[in-house]
Length: 285
Ligand SMILES: Nc1ncnc2c1ncn2[C@@H]1O[C@H](COP(=O)(O)OS(=O)(=O)O)[C@@H](OP(=O)(O)O)[C@H]1O
Image 1: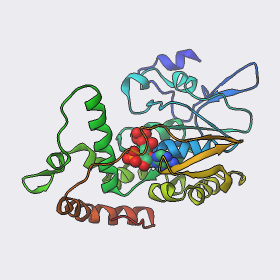
Image 2 (image 1 turned 90 degrees about the horizontal axis):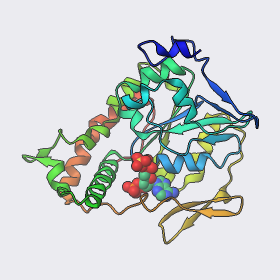
Image 3 (image 1 turned 90 degrees about the vertical axis):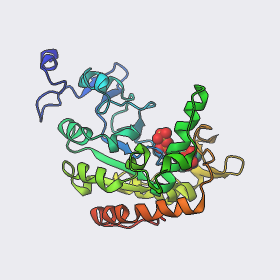
């Protein structure tokens, strides 16, 4: 009832997510997501949600919703969140992706209160590669706004050491953020997608996601084809071919080998901690 949302907290009391759906005359329903792609920023979240949308039992939100991490959105309350969701057919699972969720401290607790049974997809890349991708995106946006951007070496290193003040570096400390998620969600609720593998050969990774979500296997090898111009796999959906937007798959800056090695070394211990947390290793530098 609307009164429930006029309380100081934008969320109803725990266990009450009765707001959960808006049913439309055509039989579709907008409801809280069953699946949330929580990140990581630049991990391949767009590719993942597009690939998952190939499945007929998945309805995906088009835009990043930023409900749990942006206060201005969060204050609008659950009914607003639900209205950002796609129109799902009966039997379809709803999914949204907001890459910033993974590294935003308040998100796991908030999401857990709304849907403790949510299935979480986390797509990760080699942490160094992710930093370079993050840097590339930020400098590209600054360039568009005619703002100055600092050369990569200047942001990565300070007084000869890895610059811990650089925010993009923190976002690649996967164990720190994962620990925060595991305070609220059991490991079994999180499936980690190997973002580097998804770039090289998406189909097996997508099959693993299908299995985790207990979806009947439906996505097929023929849904993917390598586009040599783009240099990435693109999608074939009922005969129609499409690649991701040009903002996906940008060239990264060249970094001096000694700095690159410093970064690899820096991430070695955090990576080990992450592998321990999730009981699995990844092929990172
Ligand atoms: N098939 C396919 N086509 C194009 N791009 C692909 C694909 N699969 C994964 N990727 C990688 O996705 C990276 C962008 O990640 P995100 O979508 O998570 O970025 S964002 O956080 O939403 O901005 C993007 O990072 P960059 O290469 O650094 O641009 C891509 O490497």
